Image (cartoon, rainbow, N blue to C red):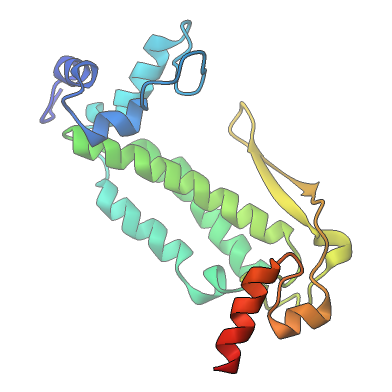
Length: 211
């Protein structure tokens, strides 16, 4: 294996905690007593280890820093992150899926730091896909979520949380969860006062305006 750190040395370092942030990022902290989060299933330690160390075995691959710039180029345009519309987001989603399928498996690491970056890019691609799918589902204009193809807030259909779940096959399923909250009344929205604002905070705001 042509890399700056051998597999055996990496595993020894991770076990001893000597790789710092890289090891903590990949393997997680020590879970609390009785907690299951972060615990590797007993039946799949070898499979997970191979998956974690895979970038160290890539000889002719892609630099994770270059991959970061590519993904940023997909997600940063104004019509994808700010003034969104269906056409732009569908195009960005297709590029993110191609990035996920063709670039992520080819990411190459030569040390523990590079290995962390490779897995970080894998997670960033996952988040980018989930964000785009959720933004496409919310067909309205609400807060910082501005869509040029839907100019109004739609409380009847979208006073809810958009949920994105990843299945065992890697596919994403988009759904909604209705909220128990109420829409902000138009008058309160215009005055900048929240319906749930405490009297003390509202009073302090009024004092500042009177000065």
